Image (cartoon, rainbow, N blue to C red; front, side, top):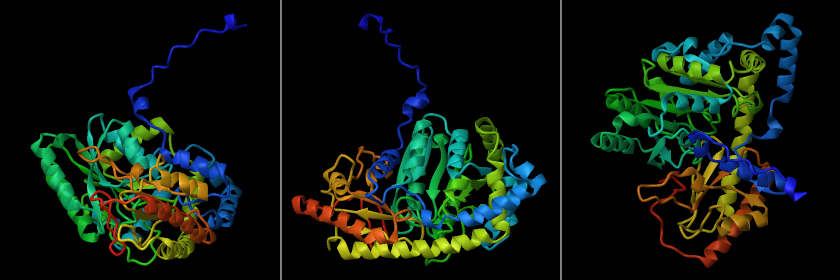
Length: 452
């Protein structure tokens, strides 16, 4: 029997890109949550399933499919750039958010692309701009899914610190100066910034820094243009702060910035729709890439999104989400104040919007998946995202391992207090057995929301 076993196959000759691409860390965390339905998960950045707009989408879909000509359009292939009526509606929507005409920053429907979620935009932009060895600048910590994408493309991700006003833009300028001195400026392709209620920290880039960031990339665009990729996925989930003008709005000629937003967080992720405003010459390249990917985003989903914006159900749903998520955020912050050890080394951000709180613990506590805190939390039935996933190593190769991200999107209001209590009990147990001086690499200030 064993003599008939076929010989072992030779290994696959994977591409360099495939070898660089690692499994997304969140996959394992979601798997742990699925395996234990009693687990209280603050890990995955999912939305609240109890307020998804099922009734609105049902009524809208019925209207679309009951109109035979429109149904035929909705069920057919569309254009790569996206439904023109939706792109026009998006321009009007962004004008309302900005409080000024799109023409003031040289935008029309021709400068908008509709993608399969804003995540596809991030990939397409990076794929259009980045060659192996190129440089992308980001905050530290940053959105780990996209930094993983950049690394799979062969980019070198260089980082600057975060503080209470978001990415430290002066540090961006100093980094570009150093790169220019080394002759590496031609390798810098873009600066990535989550400008509103950042994932993972919940921080927002201040208004003054937005304008200054555009000025900096213009000044350092010598032989080639350096762009700012502004990820505004959480912009509309604003709870108790005024809306700020986008980075994009300071780019009067639409040459130096890309603004990407989504229907996922403010409406329904199942539609898998994002939209992006970008320079015309970049649009040309991105459309070629997207055409090779999928020929265009789902027409039916685009028709649904268009109708939600036309009939007012989109804006009404955003208000529902703001009320729900504000309540959850307040419950989470209250639970942290109530249960976390009263130590100056235990600090967290207090976001004005979005879905995330960033928690910093004493440097002696290892929050990584391999550390004792993570195991104790799993044993107690609570889950978080280890902060190490969100950091890039500094010049010495160090990555802080005493931070973690908490998401209050999917967890129910009733689960928040017991979940944080379980987390706090595990933290206290670790603090009782470990001690260490303050770490310079991973700080968060409760009042200012600073992270460094």
